Image 1 (cartoon, helix red, strand yellow):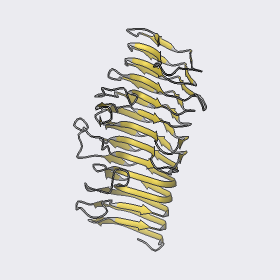
Image 2 (spheres, rainbow, N blue to C red; image 1 turned 60 degrees about the vertical axis):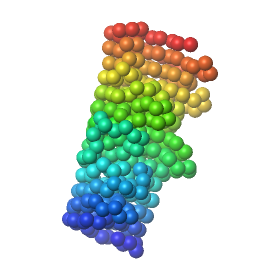
Image 3 (cartoon, rainbow, N blue to C red; image 1 turned 180 degrees about the vertical axis):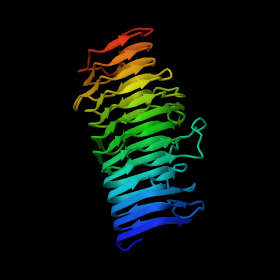
Length: 361
C-alpha cells in the first residue's frame, strides 16, 4: 500500500506474502493472518514505514528465519512513523522481534500476545536474543501496556543503538512477562540516550539468564529489569520473582533490578524475591556527575545480597525492607574507585543468615 494512501480499511487479511504500508495516513488494519515461511527478500509479515495514524488490530503473524537482522526484522515492524497503534495482536517472536518500533513518535502497543513457539529458554546458548516487544532508535512517547510476553530473549526492550537517536518518555506499564532467557525488561543506552522511561506495575517471573556472553565466556544475563546508562527512569510497583536462574557471572549486574551506569533514576515500591544466589538491587557504576538515583521502599527477600552498591556515586538507598537474604546490604569498591555521596538510611534488615550490612574496601 503506497503512494500516500489515506482513509483505507483492510479487514480479514489472509496472506502468504507480506503486507507493506509506505506513506499511508489514517489507515485501519483489522483481523487476519500473515505467516511467511519462504526465504524472500523481506521476511516481515506486517511492515509500516513513513506513515501516520495507522491502527493495527487483531492480526497474527510470524517472520521466517533468515530475516534482515536482529534489530530490523519481526512479525510487526514500524519504522519512521507517528501515531501508530497496535492492539490485540497475536504474534510469534521465534525469529528476531515480535513487535518492533523504530523511530516512532507517539503510539501504543497494548493487549498483544507475544510468544516464541520454537524456543526453549533452557537451551539457548547464543548472544542472538529475540525481543518480544522492542522500542528502538528515536522512538518516543509510546506506551506498551497490558501485553503478555513469554519465551523470548528480552521480554520488552527499550534500546538506543545508533548515534543521535535518543528515546524519550516511553512507558512500560502493566505487562506480564514470563520465561525469558535474557532479561524481563531492558532499558539500554548504547550510542544515544534513553531518557525518562516509566516501568511500572509489571509482573516479571522466571528469567533464565541462559544467554552465553562471549565477552566473558559465561552466562551473565538474567535480570528482571536492567537499566544500562539510563537517565530519569521511574521503576515503580513491579513484582519480580525468580530471576538469574542460570547466571554464573556478575559482569551484567545479576539482580532482580539492576542499574549499570546512568543517573536520576527512581526505583521504588517494587516487590522482588527469589534471586537464585544473586542480588535484589544491583547498583553499579553510577557516575559522579548528574542527578542522584534513589532506591526506596522496595521489598526484597531470598537473595544472596539484598542491596549491592558497587563503585557508585550519588545514590540513596532509603526505607527498603530486606529479609531472608544472606547479607542485607553490601557497599564495596575496587581499588580504583570510591563510593561517594551515597546514603543508606531507614532500611530494615531482618532474618538474614549472614550480616545485616557489610562495607568492603
